[in-house]
Image 1 (cartoon, protein in one colour):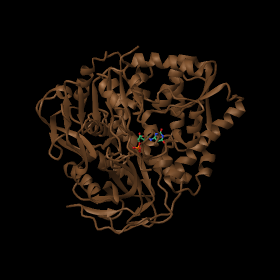
Image 2 (spheres, helix red, strand yellow):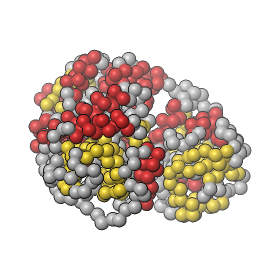
Image 3 (spheres, helix red, strand yellow):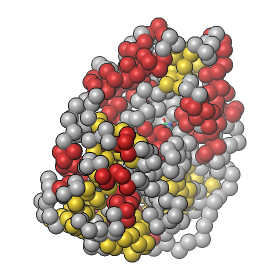
Image 4 (cartoon, protein in one colour):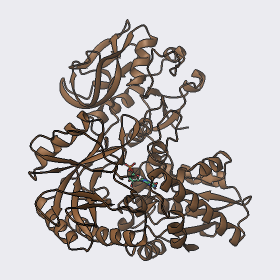
Length: 594
Ligand code: XMP
C-alpha cells in the first residue's frame, strides 16, 4: 500500500487542487468527507482540512470528530480548516473582523513547521475569508500574520498541528508549494506517486470496472478525450472501444477534418463520426439563455449517443459510456457536495449524473487537472501537437456566440480613472468567491498600457458589484471613440457561427505564431451582437488567458503592435464593427463568456 495524505473536503473550490499539488510533490492523496471515521483516517500519513464556505459558529456548519487530534498524525488546516481546528481546541473565531479577499501580504514570523522552507519576511498569498480567528488555543503559537489578521499561521509543534488562514495550494500564493512540501516532510510520507504509477493503477481500475463489458466513448479531439481513449485502449484493447465523434457544427473552422487526422495518428480505431450540425442548430433555435444552451447541448449529446447505440445494437448491459471528464468540469458544474454551480459542463448534465449513480459511466481521468492529463498523454506517447492543444469547451463556439433579444441595460455611473468607460447592454458569466455571477462587462478606452490596465480592471470589478468583466477597446470600424452602441437581436444562426469561425481562425493563426513560449493557455474569440458606431453588425472580443489548470487564470498581456495589426485585420471582415480585448482575470470573470 502506498503512503497517502487525506484531504477532508469542506466544500472548497480548491480541495482537488490541493490533491493535485500533493500529487505533484510525489505523494498519493485522497479526498474524503469530513464525517469520515477516525479509524479510517488513522491509516493516512497526514491529514489536510480544506477550506469551505461555512462559518464554524453556525450550528449547521460541517464538523470534525475531535478524535482526529488524538491520532498522532500531522494535521494541516487551511482557511475553514484553520478555523475549525482553532475553534475545536479552545480558540475563538469571529465574523467579519478581518475579511481578506485576493492577494494579501503575509509575514513569516518564524521559519518553522510548515513554514520551515520559507525565510522570515514578506510573501504574497491568496486569502478569501469573512471569519477570522481572534484567539488561539493553548499549546499553539503564531508563526505568521498579515496586516489584518494577526493569527494567519499557527503551529503546535509538539502535536504536529499547523493551521493557515490563506490558501497555499493556489498558484498565486508565493511559496505555497514550499509550505505543502514542508508539510509532506513532516508527515514522513514516501514520495511514491508518479504519472507512471497513476497509469498503472488506472489501467487496473479500468479492467476491474469494465469487466467483460465494452466502452462507448464520446471523443472530441481534445487532449482529455484522446488521453482517455489511449488509457482505455491500453487496458481493454482497441476492439473493446467504440469511439464516436459528434460534429455539432460549433467546431473551429476545418477542425473536424483536422481532428479526424489527429485521432487516426493517435491510434484511434473504430472512430465513428456523426454529423449532427442540422440537429444542433434546430435544437438551439431561438435559445438565448447560456445555461439553457448548455443544457440542450449536453442533452443532445446523450440523445445522439443513445440513438447510435441502438442503431449499432450496443446493449446497455454490455456497454459502459466513457467520457474524458477532468476535475474542473465537475467542480464548476457544482458536482461536489458543497460547491456552487458556476456553469453546467456538457458532461455533467442531470442525465449523466443519473448514469454515474447507476455505475454506467467510466471517466478514467476525472480526478486530474489538465497539467496532469498532458503528462499522462506524453507518457503514453501521444504526439506533442496533440498534447499541447489549447483546451476547447464541449459546447464549442455555441457558448462563444452571445445571443440577445433586446438590450439589457443598467443605470450606473462608473468611474474608471483616466479611462472612458462604457457599460455594455448584455451580461456574461463570472465566478466570485465560490459563486457564479451573471453581470455586465464594461469597455474601456484610452492609453494602451498594460501597467495601467492591469491595475484598473480589478479596481472596477472590486468596487462595482454590477460589473464582473472589463474589456479594452482595441479598434473601431467607424469613429475614434464609442458613441453609439446598439444591440442586433440575434440567436445562434449558421451565418453567425460561420462569421465567428472566420474571425477565430485569424485569431488562432496569429496566436500560434506570436506565442512561441506558450504563455497562452487558451484563447476564446467571442462574438457579441453589438454594433458600435454603425447600423447593424457585431463586435468581437479576444480572450487569451494564461493559466495552469483553468481554476484561476490571468488575461495574457500580448504585444500591442501584434494586437493592433490583428484587430485591423479583423475589422476588414464584413459585419464586424469593433474589436475588444478581455482584461479580466478569473476570478472575477470565467474564461468563457457563457
Ligand atoms: P470557465 O469558462 O468556467 O472555463 O472559466 C474553464 C475551462 O473549462 C472549459 N469549459 C468547458 N469544457 N465542457 C468542457 O469540456 C464545457 O461545457 C466547458 N465549459 C467551459 C473552458 O474552455 C476552460 O478551459
